[in-house]
Amino acid sequence: MSETHTKGSTEIEGGRLRAERLRKLSLLKEQGINPYAYNFSRTAFSADLQRDYQDLPNDTETQDRFRVCGRVMNERNTWMFVDLFDDTGKIQLFCHKENLPEEELKRLRLLDKGDFIGVEGSVRRTKQGELSLKVYSWQLLSKSLQPLPDSWDGFTDVEARYRHRYVDMIMNPSVRETFRARSRVISYIRYFLDSRNCIEIETPVLQVEAGGADARPFMTHHNALDLELYLRIATELHLKRLIVGGFERVYEIGRIFRNEGISTRHNPEFTMLEMYWAYGDYLQLMDVTEEMLRGLAQHLFGSDQLTYQGVTLDFSRCHRVRMADAIKDVTGLDVAEIKTFEEAKAAAKKLGVQLDLEDSRGAVVNAIFEAKVEETLIQPTFITDYPVEISPLTKPHRTNAGEVERFELFICGRELANGYSELTDPLDQRSRLEEQAKKKAAGNVEAMPLDEDFILAMEYGMPPTMGIGIGIDRLVMLLTDSASIRDVIAFPTMKPVQRNKDAALEKCEPVLE
Image (cartoon, rainbow, N blue to C red):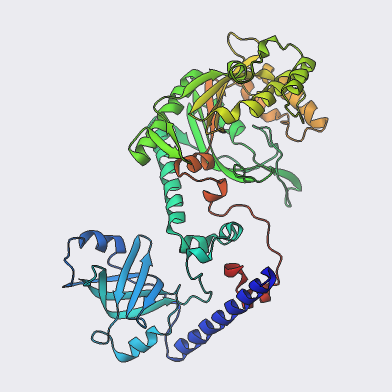
C-alpha cells in the first residue's frame, strides 16, 4: 500500500470518527445536556487519592466520597470501567447499574476518549488491586470532537508532535513533566538571585536599536510613530542602563528573538536569563554561576551529578581553561604566536577550519575554537579570556593584551552561558561600537549598531560590573535529558502546513497527519 493511500485512508477514518462525535454531541443536546459546562467543584485530585489510600487492601470498599474530574482516556466492559486522568495522574471509575440510574448509564455510551467529565463516588479497591471510585453521579464537562490517537505508538511523528503539542501532552504525560521541570528551574533561579538582593526588572522587547549581541534581528513597524523597530536580541544594554541608574543587582528572564536558523540547539525565539551585578568581575561571576548550577542540581536531583544522554556530568566543580590553552591542548596550535589576520587565516586553513564572516585575527581564533574544541568540552567547563575583537562590550584583560575578561560555560559540547567583566569606559565603548557599526555598514548583518543613548548613559558613570547571560532552554535541555531544544519549548517555531481549512476539519488532519 502506498504512503499516499495510507494517509488518505487515515484522513477518511478521522473524518468518520469526527462525524460520529458530532452525532453524539447532537444527541446530548437533544436530551437537554449542556456539553460544555461552566464549572465543577472538585474535592480531590487523583494523586491525593492514590497517596491517601495506598494501604487500602484489595477487594475493600469505603464510604468515603469525593468529587474528581478530568479527561476520559480509556473505557472497558461497555463503560463499566473508565480511566480518568487529571493533572496529577489517573484514577479508575467504576460505573455500575447498582449505583447509577439507567439513563445515566446509557448516556455514558455517548462519551468518547478525550471527553472531560466530573464524577462523585466512593473509594474502593478492586480484587485486582486497582484503586477506584464507585460512581454515584457524573457530569459531562466538555465534549471532544477530534479523535485522539489509539495510543502513544500512534502519534510518533516528530514534526506532528511539535506542531500539535496539545496532542503530544495529552498522549505522553512525560512531555508535561518536562515543562513542570522547566518551571521549577526558572523558579529556583529567581529564588537564587532574589535571595542575593537581585531585583528583576522588565526591559523593552521593541527597540530602536537591536544591540547587546551579534545576531540578525527581526524587524517590525510601529504605525502610530511611523517607526521601524526591532525585536530585542538581548536585554543587556537596558539592564546596564539600570546599573547606571543606581540599581546594583538586576536581572531579567525574558524572551529573546534572533532571526537565525533552526536546529536542535536553536529556536528563533528563546528564553534568556541576563544578570548584572555591580562591583564584581568575571572571576567572582564564575563562582556565583557554579554555586547556582550546583544548587539547581541539588534542588532537582538531590545530587551534584546528573545524566545527560547517557553521560554522567559532575557539577561539584566546573573546570576553568583559557581559550588559548584549550586550543593548544586539542590542536597543538599556539595562538599566542599568531600576530596578524593573515596568519590566523593560514592557521585555520591548515587545520581544515572553514571561515565565513570572520574579519579579524580574534574572530578566526574563535572559529578555530568552535570547530575543533567545543565538541570536546563534555564536563562543565569555563573557557576564559577571549580575543578582544569578538567581545565589544567586555573590559580589557588586566594582564593579557589583546584579550578580554570573558568566559563561556560549555557542557556536553555546547555553550550554556556567556559572562564577563563589563566594559565601563564610555570612550572605549564608543570606539568599539563605532568599529562594529562600520562592519554592519559593510554588510555584516550580525554586527552591533552604535547605540548613542547607551553611550550617553555610560558617560554618567557605571560602576565595575559583572554580567552574564544563560540560555534557559539549553539549561532545561540538560536538566531534563532532552535531545532537542524543541522538546523544552512548549510551542517551538514551525513552518505552517498549507492546507484547506475546511478539508482539515473534515479529515482530522491536525491529529492524524
